[in-house]
Image (cartoon, rainbow, N blue to C red; front, top):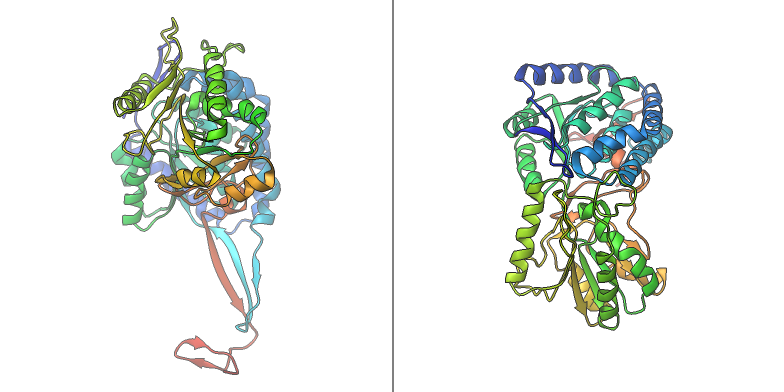
Length: 471
């Protein structure tokens, strides 16, 4: 695995990085384990000031941090700055709320005075993707730093500079040595680190393929893990949807971050009464995009992250069309050598088509026509994935009723999808398991230790079980 920064707009190879040596991996794990032993009995408030400082660094250095993202994976500069600010919000959120979220929970029981205490679990391994290099790291780092779990992490091979920039910011915020360590690991080294007895948990955000491989090793060695994987999120246009709102949001839901978002809308499921109007509006929006330098504020669609990703998406589109899909719209080619994918709309995709239920990670929209709202929900649920989704209906109440019937982890009604510190993030089915962010996110890797106390032993003890006084 070569860790290399290649600008997808200029195709320039900026820098190549060497893999971590076995000696550095061992040194990093040893430091992290030593820090965990120290943190095990330290209160949360001793760590949270670092998170506030980290948030301030991200705010003060928004422009320079954002430029790293744009250079490495082609993200629009305005979107890159938004990612940096979101990271600051996450750091501040856990700095402000971690102590409250980790407060012991008292239990009413005849056994005595009982409570569940939240303690650090141990050293964690994070395996993170390229599409949101800082955000993905912050949502695993901030809550677990507050808990007291040191982290070693393997970032995507195409975003090594982002990985180093994040590590440097954490260090400058005052985090102790061993709190967060970037490791440029090979695939074999990832398995070795997961197997290491000092690793107590594994968090991965990425593809189904990567999640399966890492989860298999984690399961073999009985390591707790969370998996945030892909999605084929549905965007349902109900029979009574306000089409002005739909037209404003639908293009953004597919083209944000060049369509390279696990929670972006990939299947537009439209009731028959709106279908033609929807297609025309989406075509107009797709044709109006401006592709170019992602640093230019006039550019509205960035290049894809790499030639490899662009070629894979094109192969998927070709396969879909060969399988009977209609290319309703394909943007005219542009005169640019960057890794741009021409926005495409596919229709007439039946269940026998290779594209049916498959994630297309880029600016390609699949549009389906259904008879009514019930058929829309049925089609939305006919997928192996269940990460997010959007529903547009005549009222938020009607939309929420449809949303509750969709087999997925997150649904947004009459609005664009959001990721905020207080909102739990995660999916079901092959989209993974576990949650990040919010209250659930900070509980993913804690030792919920039950402590029961009383002044004298319970007299009713039989076979090791404490029984009530009366049966």
